[in-house]
Length: 95
Image (cartoon, rainbow, N blue to C red; front, side):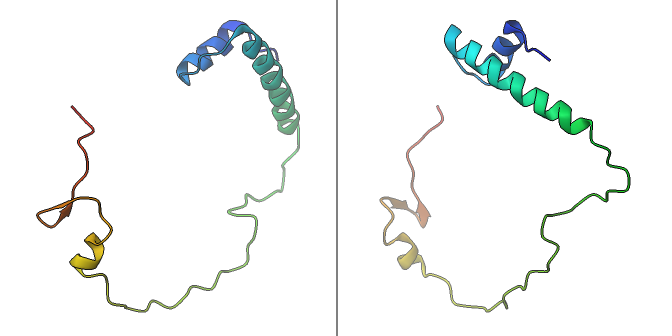
């Protein structure tokens, strides 16, 4: 299954990538090899194979929840570059 140059340019545009002609050719080769591999996987017979929720079915022990005191406001703001009226102050990032 060959990926056309137009399809690859469209994918690059969707991903907001600016690719040179050389990069497009290289990417097309890599994508073709990937698609060949995926197509080989689709040929496998999965009859009788149960879906897996995770690779390791072993149960994980959970640690006990222990209530601990939190930071005071003064401790929380100790390393903050700016604080204003009990809140962390950050530079304006949206117009």
